[in-house]
Image (cartoon, rainbow, N blue to C red; front, side, top):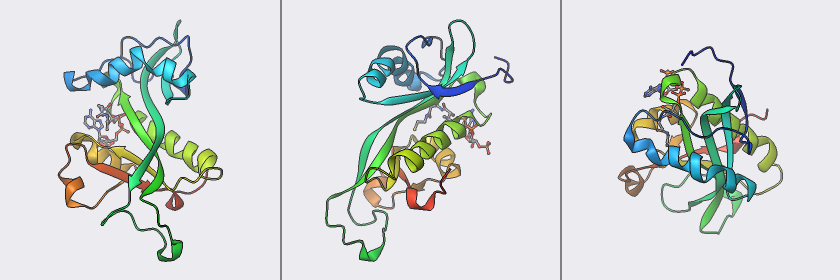
Length: 180
Ligand SMILES: CC(C)(COP(=O)(O)OP(=O)(O)OC[C@H]1O[C@@H](n2cnc3c(N)ncnc32)[C@H](O)[C@@H]1OP(=O)(O)O)[C@@H](O)C(=O)NCCC(=O)NCCS
């Protein structure tokens, strides 16, 4: 794939072609299957919202995507610190979760993944946090993508249980993210 193809970043649409995403390694098959079988219906039914890099062909083709859902962080030792006077006595912090993220393997290393995450953080900061209690963005990070998420501004949740997880939880405190 030529890396200079003109990709549009927008919400997934019913007419978009969702087949043909190159995943690189078999372990990422669930991300391809989700796009092909569930992403459009979940988007329409408000079960998950998907935003994609689209190649402007006929039909338009998905070359990478991010899926956002509601989530939470369990409040426990090592959970992210909020203001000490917040007086927050509930078992979970409200969050938005990055449920899926993938870029076509032939296009990786061109900042597309970073831009998908930045789009997600921007939506949460500008459209969710001002209207709905939502302090964090979270992700269950595959070990190979830990550095990628650190570069995107995420922090590893600092508990032993979390560090030992196959997919450790990482978070961004949205009060630390500038408004768009
Ligand atoms: C993680 C992923 C979405 C990043 O997308 P991307 O478009 O390649 O990311 P960017 O170009 O914005 O790269 C940011 C960093 O990711 C890492 N990265 C980039 N390309 C990579 C590749 N082909 N393999 C491994 N890491 C890579 C690098 O650390 C890069 O930093 P650098 O630009 O300083 O070198 C992509 O590698 C991917 O789809 N991986 C498979 C699915 C996956 O792991 N999803 C995350 C689920 S938690």
